[in-house]
Image (tube, rainbow, N blue to C red; front, side, top):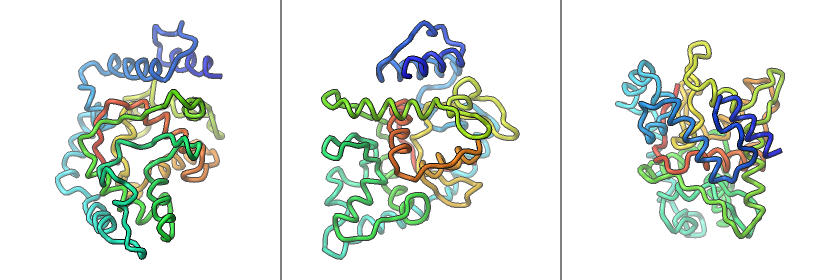
Length: 278
């Protein structure tokens, strides 16, 4: 399956690397990032953190105007208050995140003890439950406040997803995420890569399709269509609905593995969340 997926994306992208029949994660990220560097040669690599606004001058102008008074600022303020408020047992988020609120660069991470991918949102709820607090809903509401604050405090750090070599289950999770990314779904029979590899920079009605690299750096995101801040897993579900496929549960294994692969593709790109998008 892995060989077929690698061959598929390279053929779709019109790449000269079509002879490559298998790849390690390191090979994957090199091939993917090199593809976009060649597709958009005038774009500084770190600009991919800005998604479609890195490649569309018209949309960037509108986005820069929005960023003068960012709609996500109230979420950051509420998230800071959450971080500084102690749990009922006297402990706090700081007891769960020894690196402080600027810990986003450590996630998603593989947990050998739990045998699964741990995203930042999952780690937040595990912290709450370990301290006798109710978990937060994963796509809307206060989860976005604490995520926004932690993202803001993590700005300037580089995406650095690690796939530990001493646990083959980590690589298996990465491969499952990759398979998800390249699998066609729904009545429209679309996969993630079809929009964001060969069609990146193309127009879909009034939208410009963003490149696949850098897509995970700015979350949580304030989307105009939502009128609020939302999580990456909310966006995953929205994409599946757009191709008329049944969404998976937020923070379920499918989305966590997808996030593991998806974020790994952006290794080396600066974190700049929270962000505003159309």
